[in-house]
Length: 340
Image 1: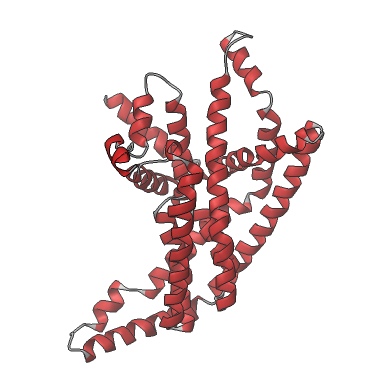
Image 2: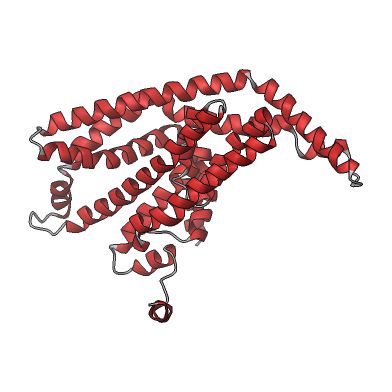
């Protein structure tokens, strides 16, 4: 037992130390899985394998370069505006203290400044955005890995048969695992777009700074169920409060709430299905663990990584019960009968 615990500690330390290399590769693998349906669609239209991969690669490369430019330029502008945001945030806290004191609630200004340090809050947002910049800065490595993964995907079943030493071996389970993962990532990507696009339009119409950056943040953090949408809404809502006042801040918060409720509670469960879902506790624990290992990017990748483990376990007889524990609670058949 001590040997196993020591091995786990060494592995986790290695993952933390190699995060700068592992994270871009993981991002590339997930991008390649998402890109496989367009590649297959082009192949069915008569494109050669290499041409389909090149067309999809160029499209993804252009999008990735554009996003890298938007994120890096927005973060640079955000950092130049930090003193202004910190001063306004401090003014808001001072106004809150004055309002509480005027209503007979004695609050120490020093305690409020200590608990709500504006520099600490803005620094936290900056560090979170810089973590995504680290991944985007490795554009060449990510795109190169995407090409290799796409080119290797078609021959993977033959490699598995050669690995087990049986040219007639049944490797349909590998296609099933990849299909489930592709379905999960495709649905999450579609739902993330259905949130990010209206959020960006709303912020643009309201006049909030860096609307495209906050829309991209909503897109990425939507891969974290339940908590991701809340985390993504905090910076733009806070920025709206600072720049435009309480009324507009409440309006932006209501818009986020409406978009996330419609997509997260109504559309996504129908598109995803319960079989590809995860327990809320598992989502939270995986987000805490991978966030501790790899920071904000690890939080975004936490659910896809846990989903891969769940899908793999579902296709094994001995450990299928672990996959059931990782998923949501099954519906009560008696309740379903009563409702019908």
